[in-house]
Image (cartoon, rainbow, N blue to C red; front, side):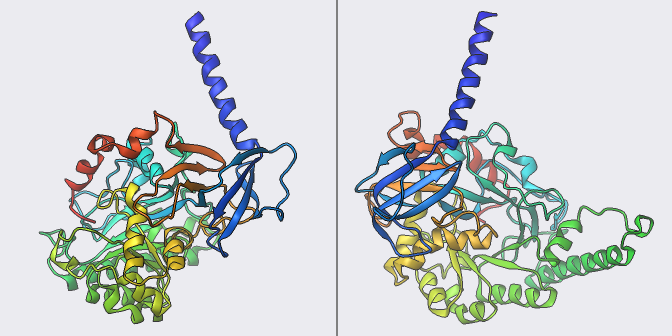
Length: 436
């Protein structure tokens, strides 16, 4: 009985500590602040309260509340938390081999919030991730947008979106190119892949029409269809289609389907982006690209070069980066932006591509991605230039709560450890389909 009382007391104390950390007013002083939405601020001040940003600016221009806890971060870089627009952390899965199209599959039903991959990602500065289902399907399911908070259940991480049927923010994961080409019921050719995807959207349009015609008359409404429901949400612009595509011709196929059906789309990987950057920009479509330091994988990714970021920037297209973790370890997220800068992408656009551009691609730009008054207090503290190989993420904060501290010996192994921090998630994912 005594031990039980001690346990309950400890748990309650921990909960109170978490709440007080979020509710407390904290001022960070002395850092160089990269707000992303505006010019860098030397000797800056960031004030957070109740999990939100209260003010940000140069020392002397920002009022620090009398009751604030002041933290001196002089000599450090302070910037928004990173937004990973395409990740497979959490050990989830997706559609199986029974069909090439699984719009009814929800990755949220397979997320393990106790996976060490979340802790690992936070050490790399990732605070928001679009966690994807699948690999190797024309449509592998519904994605989920997560805040990488300390979590007891998946609901502690989920970002809410009341516009969607399940109330959880997320998109749809689609793909073309080599990955989905297999034996039936999968397509055997690229042309058949596009035909199967078009047929699904046409089927959803008919379902959408019947719902609209029924109006408020429940007796005339068609039976609920879990396959078509998320596709209708995509047709209505409520759910973004995140489209895996590599080759230049496959990219143009996606742009044609977008014109045909009017859905909102983000191109993912976009290996050949530098070959069709003008077409991507003219379509007003954003690209979430990946940059690798080691070639290989598959033939359709042979043109994966560092210059895609520069070409997309010059064309005027919106561009972000993603890890596709475990293709690129979340702890190395900064490195791919550094590679792009080395090949001509501007530093400003590369930093935006890690933060605010990714937030736009998830419809979260009003909450995260930049340091502005009223936004979520999601930020990271670095010990040096973001693009230096000698720089580390020292702290990661989400909603005003510190979730990673490199000086904490319990946290450090997730920043420096090897394959053991995956707890098998990497191998579980890629044994079911290969590189995303």
